[in-house]
Image (cartoon, rainbow, N blue to C red; front, top):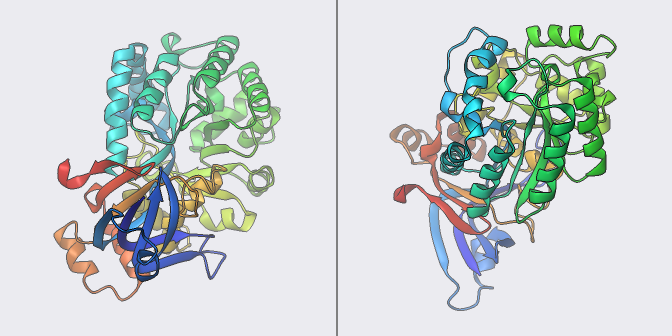
Length: 431
């Protein structure tokens, strides 16, 4: 048993729809045993139950929350983050595809995976839904690095059999065969989970998408991840390539890829019928505000998504996104919401990066919260991490103000420590 003293925040519901969505213990105690949460509550109450000699880690003055969950990110794009381009499609051709070519080399994939995971942990992200490359070795390298750190990670080999360079192309049959072999090798091995990963509809033939859908049916507890309705030019291209489909989203549904545990990046240019289908099928949107602003793709409409009852979560989308920090992602999400006439309270942004993301992925009770038995992935946030944060948070009058300051002014420096399965995997002072 290990005990951690700090202010504690975790969620039970979406703050947008429940008055009692969160638990807040200003002087709290988190109890962890064998990598799982035992209890979370007031320090005075829980401390009295501890056996003599139980180790107590004192983070008084800091805030413990569940680890952040990033629902859409590309680890091979780490080295091309902040690359200039006039839009999504030229950005793919100029930077993304040449960068991903290097992952044919397993040693390069392993080095990048190590750096990428350390960067996530530095930013307080303990789980992510990760795109690898078309190379099966890129998946092996990623899961091996995650396994070494005992991380709960979801990842998959990208499927692309057309409209991409020859040296990044698989076939419908080889892509499905390689994906199934990777599922058998990695899915549910330790904390690894597999995602069937067509890059996006334009780079997969209908045959490839249908085989991916058959895999998703054969392995119902795997994940599905792809991109949809990110960019206006991309949407026009999809209409040309799939004239029989009602919409971009319908391309995936026709192929059996719209279901629970399916998470689609962006979802900017959906219509009302699309949003209704997302809600009805249990698929979720990964909202990527830094990427959408960087590439000029558009603004996600939180109000429309809420009216439809869509599941959603926040995501960095590195390397289109410009930071691995979920705090920085909240910063941009808040502004995107304001530009579309919505308002995102800080409580809801923290929900969308923790329990909301776990719900979007079908992993509530496993990650994203402090319910007894949940995996003990948590972070320690320091409201005094920078002089400006210290000055601002020294006179916060409410929890909402404190969280808002962390979201708008915080970054990786605000993450004092990151724990995965109850073990420290990043300590800022030791970095």
